[in-house]
Each structure stands twice: as C-alpha cells, then as structure tokens.
Length: 314
Image 1 (spheres, rainbow, N blue to C red):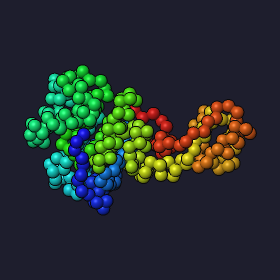
Image 2 (cartoon, rainbow, N blue to C red):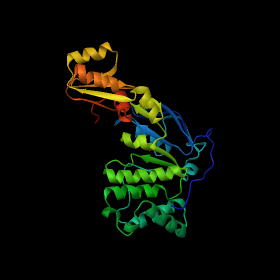
Image 3 (cartoon, rainbow, N blue to C red):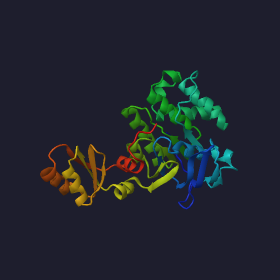
C-alpha cells in the first residue's frame, strides 16, 4: 500500500471524545451514559456480550444512529453539526457484507469512490493499491458473490479504506471467518495501525482484542464495566495464572475458602485466580486432587467471563 496516514494530532486532542452517550429505543436503554476517548494512532476496542450496547455505541460515532443525549466529538468537531466533514475522514466496516452482488470486486470499489467525489484515475489507482494490499488483486474481475467469506470481509475492509481515512471504524470485522482468514485480516490491520491509522473496533474475539487493541472497555447492559490496557485488566481482575479443577470435592472447596483464594465455583468446575500459581498448583495436585486439574496463563477472556457472566446470551 503506497499511502500513509500522516494526519498531525497531539495526545491532548483525542480523535474521538465521547461523554455521557445515551441511546434509547422506546423504553429500552441500549447505551447508558458511556464516556470514552480514542487517541491518534491507537486501536481502541469495545467488548461486550450480545445486547451489551456495542453496536449502538459504535453506530453513534459515525453518525448512523443519532444520540439520544450526550456529547460526541470526532476530530474535535461536534458530530451533530459537522457530520459531512467528519464522514469524509472516516472509513466504516460494518458487520454486514453489504457489497453490490452485480458488480465485480474492482467495480465495487470504483463505484463506491464516487461518494467521495474521487476522480476516476485516482479511484482506479487507489483500488489497485487496496486490492493488492488485501490480497484480492487476482480476483478483481470476479463478481462479489463468487468470493469466499474471508475474501468478502477483506473487500468490505478495502472499501472502508478507499478515502484514505484518518479513523477506521470496525464492527466485528472477522466474525464468521476461518482462522487463516482472520489472521490475514489481523495482519492487514496491524500494518495500517503501524502507519498511524486510528482504529475503533468492536469484537467478540478476545484473542483479537488482546492482539490489536492498545486500550479497550468491556460493557454490559449499556454501561462500561472496566477500561484499560488488555494486560493491565488481566492482572487487575484475574491475576497471572488460572487453576481449573474439574469435578471438585467438598474438601477442595473447603481448602479454597480456608486460603481465601479468589475463585469462581461453577459446580462442576472450580476456577482459581492467582498471581503465581505454580506452588499452589502442585500442592493441589499432590495433597487435594489427583484428577482433572490444569494450570494456564490468564487471558482477556477470563476477565470478560468473570465480569459479564457465563450464561448464554441470545
């Protein structure tokens, strides 16, 4: 990719500055006084279970869904008064693969470029750059319906980059992709961020958030639960190590309570959170439990499940 993102910002001037965002649908409160800021060049993530308010929050940031109340500035501009100027500088990759099925891959990009009044020679040059960057140049003459799921998502991402945005907004960009396609998208996003592009991301994949996000918040029921760097959140809320005990006995439960260990009792499984679990793990294996007991490093997924619960969300 030939162009770079060289918009000048300073840390004191966030790309996104959201204060007390609120979104209601009738009597339903989708977003309840959410505040956050995104600085230039960082990837900021929004995590949460289904129905938490992620998509409602992100749609307000690019003007698709008007705020019920609150204030929102993008590039220092009030979104309610400067939507046209803001939209010219952002790229959006929505959840849906809403490309034109009757057009080829190349045509989808060139036609979309007209929304930005891009001259045809520039549109074609930018299209060629993006197709090569997204490893789609060999399918430029294929119709969009002929693409695999991974290729389709890369096409939607390429389209979001057509106007060389200063802010890229991604709503669950890799949902439904196989591992190879997901990693290819991640590598493309990492390269874009390395060039200075600011990214706002929602995702269900904790590995994706840990790999891409500089900072993030986890929300549920429309409210922010925690905010910070992924590693800091892991250390703060669950510790470094996780010990999982399958089918724990009452003796095991008494032991956990007597040591005042941070844990979750799921009935069929005990999850113990510790900063250094090596000696405790061996003690449990030797003295208390000789069956299914494992120790592993804590992850962002452990934080997510601890804070939002483990019940299935529909």
